[in-house]
Length: 376
Image 1 (cartoon, rainbow, N blue to C red):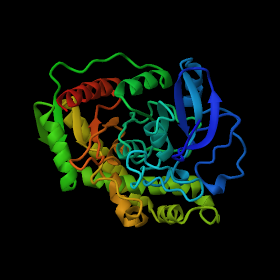
Image 2: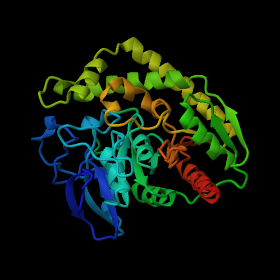
Image 3: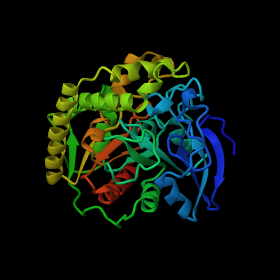
């Protein structure tokens, strides 16, 4: 394997199939340590068992696991920058961030090192790097894909997801890693709702052009959308503190991660009560919209990916997840398709579906992918 982009944390050769798979290094593979992209875990013992998703991948004779993918430390960052393990290079836009936290998973597929990759998405960590690298990235409904053997061990937000270059490959992978994946087709008359959200002018222009290629669409609103972003940060901060707070003073922890972990320790019980109320309200709003529409569309990124230099300022990066994080809070499945701005920079088109309607969402995404390709 040639990896000039820093996507691979450890090369592997598990299986004999022609389809190459990378697995994010926060998912256990028996016999190998799970470093989670952190020097804190440099001496961790090899995993005794495979994560459930890895067990299912091993059973598919068409697949070969070719490596563990690099990642933002402890899956707790949006840029993909990692001083200890190395920062993967965005293959198509090398001056810009690859996105995180599943940076190596995205870069590995974009660079052709793997055909598909497995990542995790707690606050956009599949969809954001997929958008940054010009890929398809799928976050399933919360709980659909087993998190057994995933780190952190407990989360009310995190989902195991899939990277690919086409939605068909996502569907084939999902059929391997979940118990049941029904064959679905998009409705003949696809009802598309366009969520009214904040994004910069370049993103809005690219998104508007895409909407003209899709036929009839209708604008709609979710009143709790902004609150859901903030609540998602609150919940993730508290859960990350619970998961790795014991390591906060370890000298191996990166300073960017350390600061966010410490911030999570400040979340109060009343903050979580409020966040859970927002979760319930926002989920109900999205459910109600999906009674009217088959899918909801919005941009994946609110701005084009920042340059590596710009991303050194953490204030630049926090807002990058404001269009993806709300659906971790609500649990709804969401997929991003490649979408470029007029300057040829990636922004991504995000499609959201009904809770546990993942196969139908992917079928609708396949139809949207076809319409966009035909019109380009």
